[in-house]
Structures are given as structure tokens and as C-alpha cells.
Image (cartoon, rainbow, N blue to C red; front, side, top):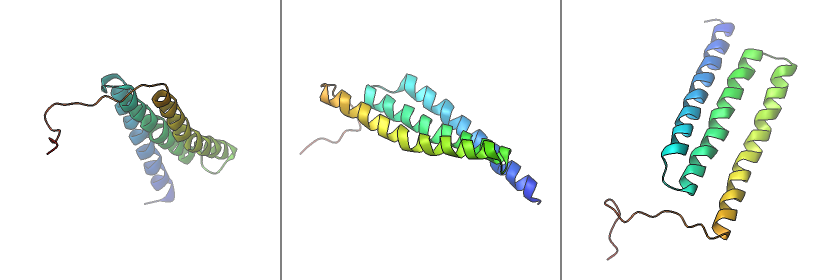
Length: 111
């Protein structure tokens, strides 16, 4: 295997997995039951899905100014996305929005 083939495989793998995470996260935003669960789906999509896509694009760019810019965007995303999700959840909890708790099957009865 040549180095070029390995870089292409890493790039396409990152792009495909990042796209899959983005699609699954989008479905999660529609299907999850409450605000906090939807925030988790959106936060994972933003951080992991977009991060893998940026990583794949960085592999495609090679060693260049474009790759450096993609790396800076990735670092910014990794710092701001979890912080934003935490601040938004904290503001919702402070405002009185309670998480959805199911009393259905699967929940252990307190003895």
C-alpha cells in the first residue's frame, strides 16, 4: 500500500463516518422525546459528525494552508460546541424546563 492510498482511505473513512453521524444526529433531533435528549443528539452531531468531516477534508487537502485552516476550524468547533450545549442546557434548567422521565416498563421500582 502506498502512502497516497492510505491517506485516501483515511479521508474517505472519516468523511463517511462523519456523514453517518450527521444523519443519525439529524434523525435524533426529530425522534428524541425532550429538549435535553435532542440537545444531546445535536451536540454529538455537531462535535463528532462535523469533526470527522473536517478531518476527512484535511486529509484530502494534504499539507497546505487549507489543511491548517481546517484544523483551526476543528479546534474551534471542539472547544465551542460542548461549551455551548452545556450553557444552553443550564439555561433551560434554570428557567424551569424539567427533563422528561418515563414511568413505563424498564424503570426499576423503588423498594
